[in-house]
Image (cartoon, rainbow, N blue to C red; front, side, top):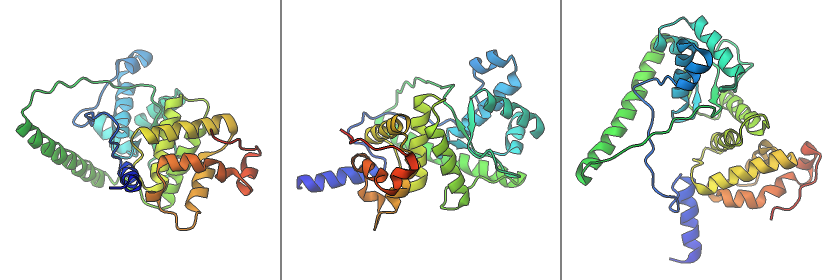
Length: 278
């Protein structure tokens, strides 16, 4: 295999979320329980508000990384009224635990992002034979599928909607919200980086996992914060390229061509000149 072919395969695998250089790790998904964080209980002296926080945090751990659940869904999980949920959600957003990505949305469930103010760390000790490990992995996939079916079933009973990420106006609203979050200087850098990765994933329909995607997100954050170069301008420029195909635009190439998005017409958006990326 030639070096050029090897690089192509490496880029293609990274676009699928496979980073061969990264150490292997076990990713645990939160299912089957709603956490009550001590830090939130102690802050508010209110277990109900902590339960609302735990429910929203749990939804944010699912595939698309945001909470799309309606007030009715969260209320049913905790055993309180939707109006009470709304009151607690407003306080949690005001205090910076979640960011409302769709603040102007009317008569539909809002989309919330976890700000990263509270994190869960876990330790997993494994004492399983190699043969049983394969069975466990298959069961994990079945459990995840069953969880999705249960949530969808409950969702349909209550008339809630959990839209799939599709190129519609709803997705555009979500991308806009993520872009706004990614540019906000008032939140932690890691929260901005997470929002950048989510916005790119939604806009380009790719998996933004791995070390090189993290490096690109850090570069994008630096350019936005230090030089006023919005990620949204770069993404619009990127998809406007003739014959654009995300398969041929791995994160290292995006970083290389970032300055070109802010030349000419794009420069008018920021009002600043773009120094070369070294």
